[in-house]
Length: 62
Image (cartoon, rainbow, N blue to C red):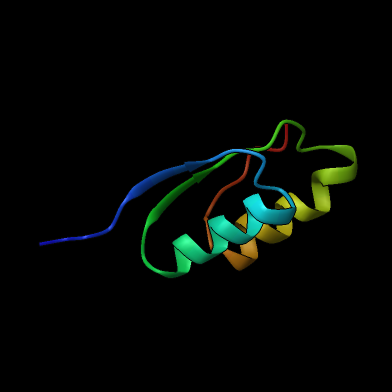
């Protein structure tokens, strides 16, 4: 039996949201992480967290 969860994390660009998303992803869960703004002040955090740390393969920078 597969015990992995599908989890939605909001406000995941920094702080607790980011830490929770990273932990759940590293534990093998399927994490859907969101943030309100992916440009400006959050752009670097989003790119680092979701492309490098968590290892997602694509990111739409609109």
